[in-house]
Image (spheres, rainbow, N blue to C red):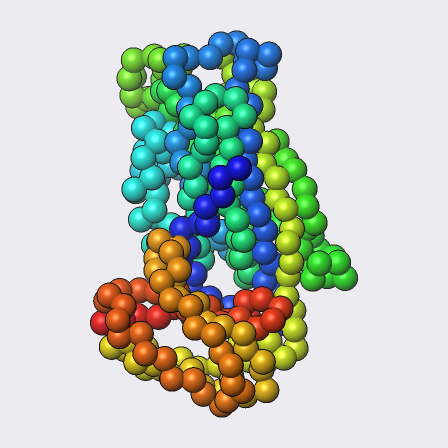
Length: 309
């Protein structure tokens, strides 16, 4: 199974000091066959799975309301394009209602049993909800979705309050922007837009179109780590690439990882000494926004946005 790390854009410095962080693998397996659905169109496939982790229900997507649909969801539902959706999620990150964008392609290009897997997804207690969408292609404006699914269990005695591994069914929705009734209907703009609603009739018949499995890997809630997060400093930021990490005493760090906004690891630095500060020379990196992760032997204990200009 092909697994590619998510497009990651964390603003974790907003984390509270008393919360935990969980790690999940998320895998979507599609169900699109004539045993469950009336028909299958020519060249059936899926747009990239796209979504976000966020703070409040319906921050990213909302069903059964007459409020205008965002162009991000509209473009995914109609043409499978995620560009506007990425911009909307990044704006939500800036506004503080979301904290990361997720995207992964399906493989193989097929209707049934196509799989998209996001690995090592970090979810914070402040942003425990997840929304994911993908276009049913071809179609007028149909997409599969989970909306504002909460990964918190409410039982802090188990997994620091995070849900253990579980699977849920995923259904198809009409975005309400095109009035076509079949997979290959001609464009017929709905004016005004209609509420997003589940497709209960022909040709999907209200049946599930995928399953999604959340595999719980780990979570952290360490007193030492929380104290570290509270005191940890990174300066100057923005910088020209020469930065200092301070207030790291008494924490046995393992390494530091630097990621670009596309989730690509661009630098990894092993930490071999116990010290009150570490000087980093990242001047070789291009100007831009990066994600700096600090890890100890138990996993990630701090994440900061880093700006190089």
